Image (cartoon, rainbow, N blue to C red; front, side, top):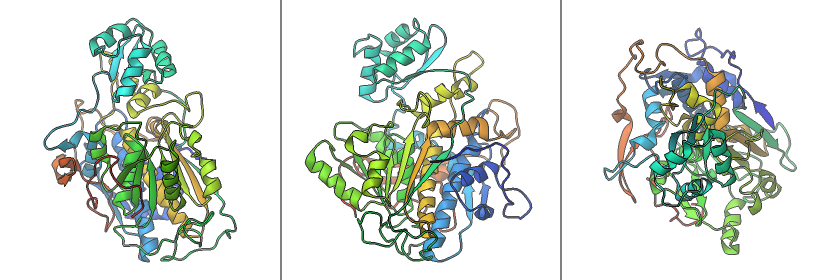
Length: 503
């Protein structure tokens, strides 16, 4: 596994004008993805500067992740269409709107609730703790870990937490499978943004190109071990057309990644267990362009269906806690033993090394556990938050970019499988330590500073779509390159109701 940390001093090549350096965070993220440096000259930005205000450079992170995803799509579009690499022009207003897509979502005029009453910051005997109890099973475990009745309300939770040390709450919750993290100072630990491992395809000949409009990957029959399915030419607006993606993700980061791949033409099939409920509002936000089915991998008949899907899949994206799928034979090495040609992407919360590597986590908890919440604290000491769940959304676009780049690499003569690992903690450490803050446009909005170059009104990047859930108001995709699709080809269907088959 090759790590790709991001030193803050990286200097990118020249930009479109040939004299000014390209955006440094974009150059660093593109390098971490293994992208050709000369393509960075295709990237530019426009739109309002005064978006996603924060003490940390959230705007720069957000636009860089969308930029590298757009560039990866443009690169693949050129390879599969036989044309030049389209110019990438990222609109910062579109990025800011998409990064809070869950907040813009309405369902028949109803605004979903982002956080449940038992989720949030709570004062403890010696500081603060952040809880996540949006799912009923997480709320039940949290209350049980603290000796509270299953129907205990937020006031009773606050009373108990106020009498306990934050770290004790954290560890009791962890032992019970609940979610609570102590708010700590900024961590100096740096996790890599992307980790790569190439898996050799049996019989592959290194350095043999497959042509700009030919098959992607090694030659062979669909489903044959070690041979990627042939993918032919594709239009510029659907560079991932024909790509089959098994989506084993939940909540935001993973679904944002697969939602983006679906936008670009991939056949994305999300598979969930019927034993693990999903929030329908969350699926209404991130289910655009995709299909969704339920399979119980402990049941032989469902398992056989899953194995048939896996036999001709191109990509598997997993965002479950590390090790959670291993018992089902879905650890990366087990997947590669059956399909050495797969692109396997894993996402975790806390990084792939260290004592917390196997713990559950969400964006809000990682912000607390790496020091972002403390860094963003108010004058009275109450922990703060980023203006978006930027670790989730940013990592989602990086995952999609990593998949697209892996397909491009195979297209240009590097056959075999790919194992890619990302984490919310990796994106957080990049934000904290790898991106220089711009002033004054990225200071908190209540602090006097330079006026934004353009006013920001999110309505220009919102649309209404009829769906199985009703009329949805939703954020439009921010992917920006010449010829990029402006919207998804289909609205989200009801969670878990599609047939588990490839189109």
